[in-house]
Amino acid sequence: MTHDPHDLAGPYALDALADTERRRFERHLSGCTACAEEAAGLRETAARLALAASRRPPDELRGRVMAEIARTRQSPPPLGRRLPSPGTRGLAWLAAAACLVLAVLGGGAAWHFQRSAEHAQALNRQVTAVMTAPDAHTSTTRAPTGATVTVVSSRSLGKAVVTTSRLRHLPPARTYQMWWLGPTAPRSAGTLDLSGKPRPVVAGGLGDARSFGVTIEPAGGSSRPTSPPIITLALA
Image 1 (cartoon, helix red, strand yellow):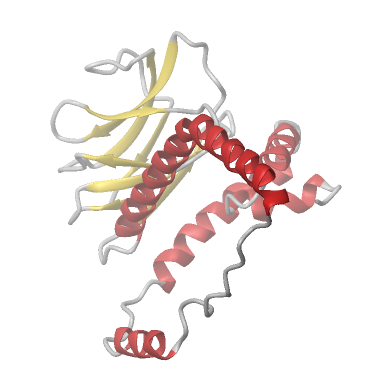
Image 2 (cartoon, one colour):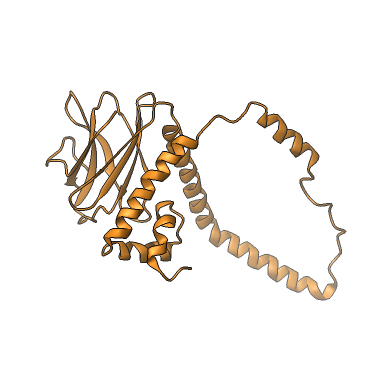
């Protein structure tokens, strides 16, 4: 663990910090303009690198991987089974009972973690699809308050990946809402959840929108904007 918060801008931009270090660095960000600018720049650079480095794997790669799997032992040989002595059977029974109790108590937690992992995997697939689309375009803007919004949009998929930095937390009765702005009336692109660890948001319904905006709305969102956008940026 590093003791200098100025060294954490890179890992923070790549979402590679443990929760303790992330919270510590975010407290540091509120008073360090240099680190805030560096983290925002690194996030944008990481998004551009993902687009530049993405390429289709060679067709023969799957064949080579499957051939290597066929030659590689998948599990060690079984060990000889020894019968427990009479003196250890009681301990073995207690251990088995304890494991059963832990399994029952931990079942709910395991189900929760599995669902969380499945949700993260699904989000990663959607983010990757948008950022590696042939027509993906990146737009970034910074508000006077220092908040930064980056949108990677794909017209062919009709979706965009939205990442934010340094948006101030709102009272429980208010929320940030995203909008597609264009030749027709503004269309909602969903709300932003700033609780917990910051994560990218995949917004659908891009359509013929020419710009992207964020407003502050009542909790739960609105059917149409009730205030001027605090952030807007043009889309390709």
